[in-house]
Length: 216
Image (tube, rainbow, N blue to C red; front, side):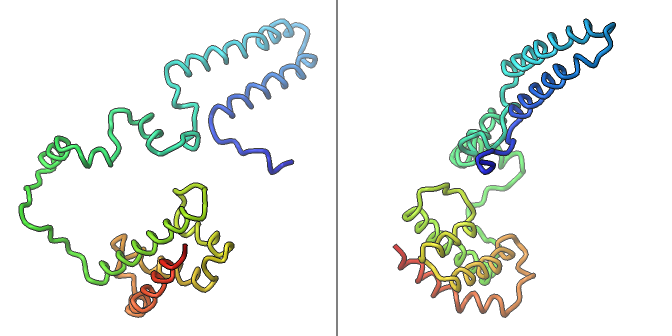
């Protein structure tokens, strides 16, 4: 029974609980109030919910978005459009040439005609490619075998693979280790990695990626 009770997830639920508790408390307390104050208290019990309803509908009319939690929105794009209506999603901005041109001018960036020359070591490039290929295969497998939320982090999907027997516990552990090695490099902290960790990734990851490709 208790597992069916959902947690409080948005302001609307809090408002409803507060109103209900206030009315219950007022009804119980009315008999304990001095007779001289009972008439005033009764008017309070009558007017309070009325005021609450009026304020609720005023909020609903002028500022609807504040009564919903982020989890109430189906997608991140819906949430972004509600709170930032004047800003396009990143994927739209990327294709808007005028916005790109304006941003370059505002930042004082000189237009580059030559090939981009990013300062990325071979080790970081390898670790990025490794993680990309592992995640690509995990997403492919998940989309094939599961009809669930596809936005979950990859590491949260792996236990489901183990449950179905798609990968072994050992493979699960190795993939987690490879992810922990790749993460510092991808986030610009490759100095935290040791030579042994990088060599481990180079030796193990090709085989793991091939095994993932065979699934499905």
